Length: 107
Image 1 (spheres, one colour):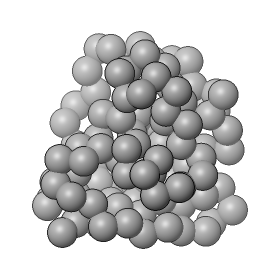
Image 2 (cartoon, helix red, strand yellow):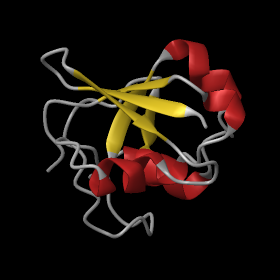
Image 3 (tube, helix red, strand yellow):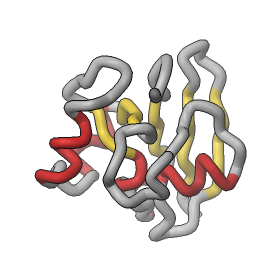
Image 4 (tube, one colour):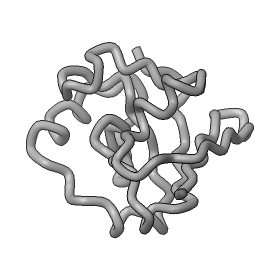
């Protein structure tokens, strides 16, 4: 089973076993990871599940689609080249060890 690692702004890490197909957002919420709000329920209607994906994993993710790109324009913290919405990241075996850094704030 792949793992996802959430890193808080202070550097603390939380590692979670991630069933294939689960979203990084849903895993965070189900496991009490602070820093992911996910106000819209994962429906791609907010940007409160914004994360910074570790550079080594970016090419393993599907490209940012238009709707996600639009939502990333309204993040509470600066949008960077590795910004993604965690509701759009579905875990795969290729993403084992995925490191996502949480922004300082979501709303």
